Structures are given as C-alpha cells and as structure tokens.
Length: 269
Ligand SMILES: C[S@@+](CC[C@H](N)C(=O)[O-])C[C@H]1O[C@@H](n2cnc3c(N)ncnc32)[C@H](O)[C@@H]1O
Ligand SMILES: [Zn+2]
Image (cartoon, rainbow, N blue to C red):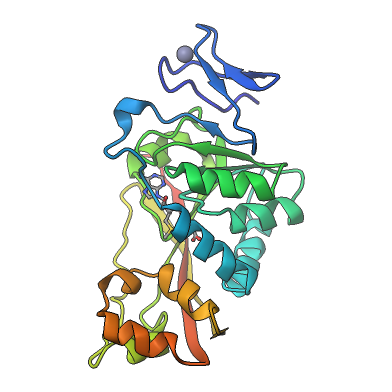
C-alpha cells in the first residue's frame, strides 16, 4: 500500500532508485544513510529543529545500555495483541523502538518520523529495513487511515493528524514519564525534588483501552552518567556545581518508570 505523501501537493510518493517522486514530479532524495527529508523549509521554525546531534548520541548510548529494555518488551507485547501491519513512531529519536519492532515483527511496515534530521539519520544508519522520515508531528506525510499503530514516546503529537492517519481499528501507544521516573537521579540533583504529575493526557476522540506502569532499575557508571544526564532536561537546567558533583560519582542507580497507555479512536455518531 502506498502510504507516503508529498508534503507539497499531498499526492502519493513512489520510490525510483534513490529518490521519491509524486505524480507532479516533486522529488525528495534519499540521504546516504537511507532517510528521506519531507519537512518543507517553510515548516521549520528554526534552522535545525528537534534534537541536536549531542542529544541523539546520548540517547543512543543509553539505549545501548538497556535504557528502554523493559519498555521495549512491553511495547512488543502490546503490538502482539493489536493489528500491526503498519506501525509509525512519531518523534522516534535514534530509533530504538522502531528497530526492535522490525526485528520482532519483520512483516510490519515500520516508519519512524522525527523533526530532527540527526535523529532520522542515526535511526536509518542502524536499521535499513525501516523507513525514516524527517517530518513534523503537526503535518504527518502519510495517507489517511494508513497506520495501524502509532507509538509516541516522550515527544509531541498533534491529535488531528493522528486521527486522520490512524486506521479505524488502529491504536495509539502513548508513553510518558510516571511520577517516580528518574527519582534517585533527581534526589542527587535537587534539594527538594518533586515527582512528575500523574498522567493528565486525555486525547479527544480516543478511548483509553489500558494503562500500566513499566519500571526498571537502571545503573550508569563512568561517562554513562553524563550521557544519562544529557538525555534529560535536567542537564540544561542544573547548576554547574550540582552537575559536577554527580559527574564525579563512580556510579548511580535510579528507577526508570514509564506510563504506557493504549488508546483507540472512536467515530463520532
Ligand atoms: C525526548 S526525544 C524522544 C525520542 C524517542 N521517542 C525516545 O523515546 O527515545 C523527543 C524527540 O521528538 C522529536 N521532536 C520534537 N518535536 C517534534 C515534532 N514537532 N515532530 C516530530 N518530532 C519531534 C525530537 O527531535 C526528539 O527526537
Ligand atoms: Zn507533489
């Protein structure tokens, strides 16, 4: 099934060698790593939107240390119970979840979308079997009703776009931080740490099917501590003294705690 849309005229794209074309011959070249950039220049609010190379590299490092191991297993288990012929991860980052989904469900067409070209590039380098696209969650370049499962982890989404692209029997798997996510790390950083608020996400037009907490203990040692900090907002908000104190520790142990919700769209009568 053709799923990818031209961001200029909205018609379907098809691939010819190293480029994607629409019937009007708008052309999008595939980058060396394999991703395609479908983000129109006039849709960018900054020159290089999304996560920068440092943030992407830090996330990739943490994924290699097992940061999403338990979360990934939970996502794979959910997919097993859902139609999953076409899966799209919105704000896919360096691509860990899309990678393991393709490994477990090779028959699925798996698409990673991120507004950061560095994210799409890193993801495409590590998985040649998925399609990675630079695009915004506000204008998803996919056909109406063409996706069975949307995954969205710690990244923005636009509900109107999700409703448009999701198939009627499709699902949204939304992952947000649970109240005690990174709690021990926060205790090290702040005198008075606070817990994350309970999930307040209540997407209009969707029914909550299930919600669960997925938690694991995570260890970071040596320079992994800096990578862990760099993938959190705390790195950019914490005083240099507090950062230096933590970076000098030989090891830290913290809970990772994710709130995983599954939603289904419903049609208004
Ligand atoms: C915190 S990271 C999470 C990455 C990945 N989902 C994960 O859990 O490892 C947020 C990601 O969302 C991307 N992002 C931010 N705004 C976006 C938008 N409007 N559309 C698509 N992606 C966006 C960033 O570039 C970044 O890769
Ligand atoms: Zn076109």
